[in-house]
Every structure is written in structure tokens, then in C-alpha cells.
Image (cartoon, rainbow, N blue to C red; front, side, top):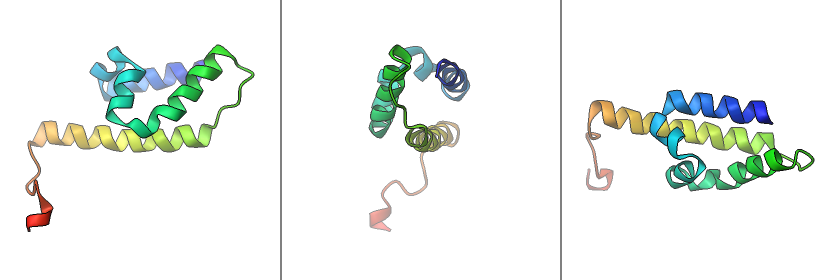
Length: 88
């Protein structure tokens, strides 16, 4: 699990350096659904005998990656054309 933790933070430093500096708290703010998987990772790091649901972690990581990609796209290209699609 230590390798997973280090790999995750190495990836996060590339994906969003600011989030990597603040840690899990900032990740939870960006994607609250990732909280349970992150908590499980913290628990298994403290106690390697605990169970860890890799599938859930990977699913949440995939969602988190998509969120970061959308945030980056907005930063690079400005606001989306249709801010309120309900009025179209």
C-alpha cells in the first residue's frame, strides 16, 4: 500500500500540484465521494492488516481524474460556452 500511496501522490503532483500540497483534505473538497476510499487508504497505511477495496479506490480515482481534467480545461479555455444549459 505504501507504493500505491507514493504513486498516487506522484501522479497528483503532476495532475494538480496545489492539491498535492494540501493533501487529502483538499481532494475531499474537490470530490467528496472520494472520502471513503481515501480514509481506507489512510487506515491500511497505519494498519496493513486492514482490508482495502482497490476497485472502489480506482473507481473514485477515475472520477477524480475526470474532475481535474474538466477544471484544467476551464482554466485553459475560459468559461464554457453554455453556462446555464437550461436556458437554451
